[in-house]
Image (cartoon, rainbow, N blue to C red; front, side, top):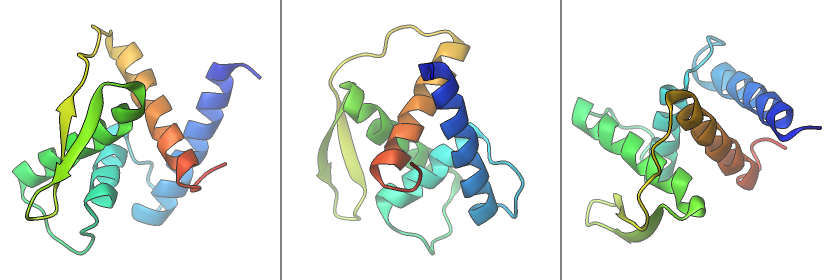
Length: 118
């Protein structure tokens, strides 16, 4: 099976499982899934977040997702429990479609590592 087909199948499965669990079946988009990963990484689930905190949660998720690719490195948790990352390498210029594929691949790998999907 080609890598692209396998990624698409895993992505579709992941979207279905997360959508069933978090949005009453309405498909979550890429940004919503990134947000959920940010909340998971922060570990504060029963909290209402302000707009700037939601942006920070998405940043946490992106750093965590791209860490295995060598773009970010976890540095420390601050006094409020928020993780901080340092940039190890700049992302190469990517077209919108390439960016989307990279993020979907990173997300699928994240949920494979966590045993949420197989």
